[in-house]
Image 1 (cartoon, rainbow, N blue to C red):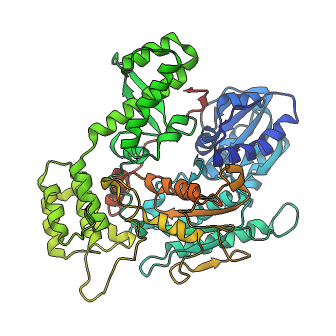
Image 2 (image 1 turned 180 degrees about the vertical axis):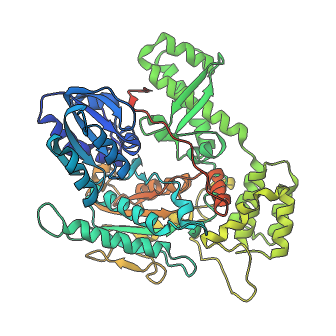
Image 3 (image 1 turned 90 degrees about the horizontal axis):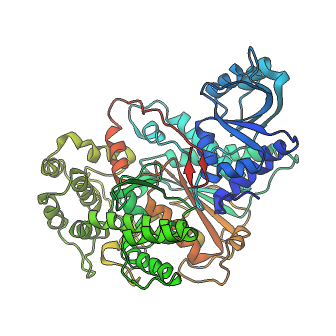
Length: 594
């Protein structure tokens, strides 16, 4: 039996792949070759391991664009995006001398008539199956998905871009495949904004494409609306959350530590380089990632002591070298101990990078109140100590932005002084270009502007350095409770009945049903953020789901941002485009890569 990860969206995607690609594969007893492009490599890596594929009769996985040796006695499965580049590469495999006995072709989304005709004209006699399975998104976590398109940020928000329309079309297609994979036909709402219209445009596109998709149902019936809701917002809706120093474990780690492609690199006690993959297969990571770093620091030593106690270790002192010895002596607990060693290192790295005074200043600016609940009357007095300190340029820019956001914009004269105080005018676009997202940077004297009201969470038991709550959490809770203002959140299309989160209650009220399967039969709230989502916003989807339990919240975006990556993208909006380096991809075999 396949040992694929049993985690929400990932499980659903793997099941769909099994029901389509794998089911066709099993009709033939012959083992097959699986050929992937860059996107489908990422897709499969996100939801299964090589061992899962082998157990389903797939013996070799190859890259569509690399030179491959012909295997004329074997059949090949092509799982690829419906692009000219992929179709041309496929045709090359059969155009002159066929590399394989036959081809089973599966597209991630709809293939245009032109591409299909081109493929048919060259390779018709070799194609045994040709299907569109509609999975053009990546399941990043159990309740998180991305469209794997960081470049969409520039295409949508750069004043020099001519690709906005095409990019929104592509994002709409990807959102439709998410809904189809979840078997949902949601009502759609968007955040109305007087200065930005991307959310409205995307909502219209998704509505139209969903209607077309379900009109082409295999059973010849038009699908009725399901009890689900899709909310679409833009990044400028909440500029604070993605640049604030967060102290929950996952958000803090991705902000302060150079983690790339979810791989954390660290040095072991003997000085050797180690790597750890931070994903849903690491159950300790799943357990800890949304906790405050203070709680994580307490939890890890306790968990390590649990192992030591089970194995009758008399020494209560926890050291990395001690864990290493434990691993050598007891192979049966090696993986479990290894995970705890990883998180012991990662926690220490986070705490070593933590700046308490900086975090306090940021919280005061973001919330508008100090830790005693007193209003911050002069935000400049809060900002100045940060500018006079030796913090990095990025940290100072983040604080300056929080100051500007707290005032809904500042004067040109004041902004010029702030940029001079940061002492790096080459990075001023990191501040100025927020206007491209519809965020006020320069205040307009004749325009009355005030911040939208926030939920009162002053009675919540929170840490002084974690008083800010992402705005998207207010939205999620209001949506589940059916409290969204229809003027601010117009309906592009409505649910068949009044949305109430399947009898949903307040996101602070506990319910008895706690199983994930129970939520599967209830409502779904899907939130899509144009322009990137932060790890703190991802966390909110889990928190609201856990609190409500009658509604599963799924959050997605074009990509995931860290404070540094977002500032870099903001700066690049008004610069000439640069070509990103070619990425390399791997398939995971158990806990290693090949």
